[in-house]
Length: 120
Image (cartoon, rainbow, N blue to C red; front, side):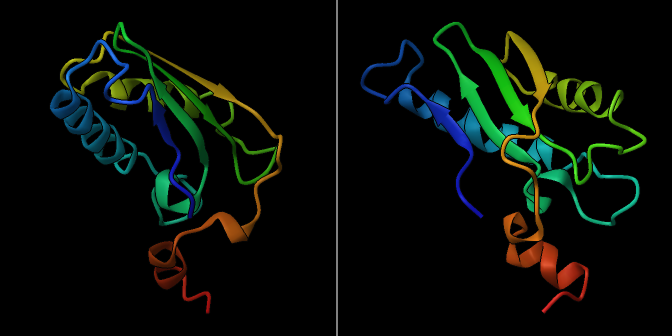
């Protein structure tokens, strides 16, 4: 799985490097609390999170996808993500947006997700 968290380079950010690193770790931990209800793996390990941007004002923008365009929780999942990430200390606001470009496929899953689903 590729690293999906992005932010300004620490030396160019208004956020101190140690705080930015803590926020990044805490955002990943928060994302790992959100599960696709049909798959027993969190959305981060599934590879549903395409991009997370943290701006200088501590606003977080998330680009995410779903396993299928007709997913029954399509209207709810961005709110679940926003609620989870909004609990991270230092985050001012969170906006999650669904995209299907590129479409999700199983190659985006982490090794941990493949193990959990017995997909070898």
